[in-house]
Length: 329
Image 1 (cartoon, rainbow, N blue to C red):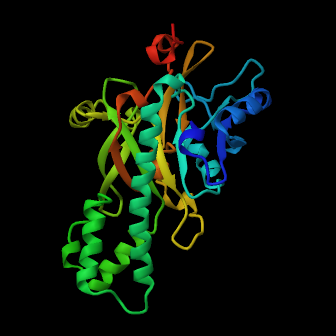
Image 2: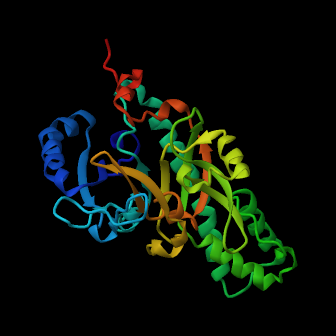
């Protein structure tokens, strides 16, 4: 896939895998065994990087009565803190654009043309928005303040292109207050997220959410973040028309060429608790704010509908029987 939509001008493909320490050697060995064949086939050079989830982000597992779970030797059992722990890994990547997808969302090459096309669509949309944002921020840096007409144009862009609804009472703000608000909202990481039609897959989806500062913006909300005992919340969640396939193009660079400190744009209160199993016993595991959920809650976010055939997950063994995962007969 990288060869078709993510190669650089010098035909290099930068690919970054996050994995577990015990898989690193086998993954690297597998790639090196196939590297020459792939590079000759696609006329590119691959630069592969690997990183692991920081063990310091692991959390203690507890039973259903919130007692710490121990192994047969009496040692506390720790579990990975979820994909939100990968925020540090993401922040270490040096690139103009970063494309994020789950490793299980793959299919045979014959099924990939739409995937290639819509990755370019998402990237193009991000570049379009980012170019305008950077132009606005440079304008705000000008010693001469922008006119009220320009401020109103920026305000409209924030509302109608970045889908940020300002807090109640903002219509009474003075021009200086509006400029400061615009500067803060524009100068953030940005992501454009592909969304597919909801067909009942497990996971999250695109929603409007109210933020601590009183704004309302687009967020990806997981099922585990929803109080399913709350009838209004459950009704909203079940009525979602689209689903999050983790198809994200993002940029973590600011308009001066620096890299954002991503932890400054997360919601630390957005962690959640999930149920897992250890040796057939049900346990509870706390997870950090999800990478594309609470960890990106204060990013500029835009949703774009993409075709369902760009989403080909393998969540259970039966998913391997899907047409997209079967070889040509």
